[in-house]
Length: 338
Ligand SMILES: NC(=O)c1ccc[n+]([C@@H]2O[C@H](COP(=O)([O-])OP(=O)(O)OC[C@H]3O[C@@H](n4cnc5c(N)ncnc54)[C@H](O)[C@@H]3O)[C@@H](O)[C@H]2O)c1
Image (cartoon, rainbow, N blue to C red; front, side):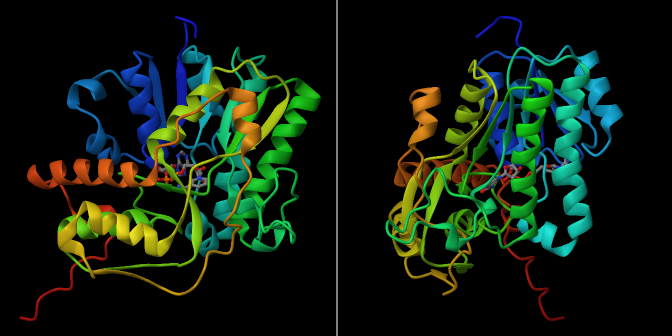
């Protein structure tokens, strides 16, 4: 770590962005938080006013290359963590916009770094296990091996796969180092939108005392948002050269066990959380040893501890009158009959 590090986080107002900003601020790092949005709620759910006071917020659009270049220049950025993107349902609803934000936006980021002559740290960005389809599992191990090729079944997955390819070409053509991390199902406070957000919304529903149906069944690999943030920062501080991409580890959990853990943390919620039968269109068993081989040990919070920590934060928000269902991904309350 260098005393001169200045971090640039795109998508800083999203779930993983908020946890990344929090970790950097708690580590005493200057952070430029870049996002199209202006709603700071995910940050205020997990950070104090004092912590937020030191963050340099820039409202900007990653589809605007000039604005990225200007911000990198003006702020003397050394480390880039690129998270801004539209998730699966938003890409499905508007594929051209999804391609513009997720693919062109990522190319813009690499281009802005290239035009500055590169940075001291590798560009770190989130790819996704969504760049694979369920059929990409090895038929003999039923596991997604680290060497698997991706055949995504969503536009989002195609865009993520394209980003990995563009990162590779920026390394080949321009020597821009990069580390892409592929999370699967991130959970924790602030995970309130996206295809795999419903296991977190179920925790909020339990705390709020309302019944809730998780949108999928089967087993998935859960990653606690705080761990993902720590891993992104570790990747940014690595001295890796070339273009690297790693699957992230985590807790492989089936949905009945997930629900049981919520019920253990919130006993009053027993019997109120259910799950839809459909399984996710992604692999569930995921090899991920290459990450620690390259970066060394990274934190992996056991899922029961991650759920308990989430409940603790949500209960505090509830006590402060700040736990709002719609902000946690719950449907708006039905208007009561006149
Ligand atoms: N959450 C997961 O389980 C998961 C899994 C795999 C990969 N990822 C990837 O991790 C990253 C962060 O995910 P998240 O869960 O925090 O998402 P999120 O939806 O909570 O946050 C995304 C943020 O990007 C911002 N954004 C969107 N378009 C933008 C634009 N044009 N310019 C600037 N900012 C823009 C949004 O305002 C939002 O704050 C994304 O790249 C996502 O694809 C997430």
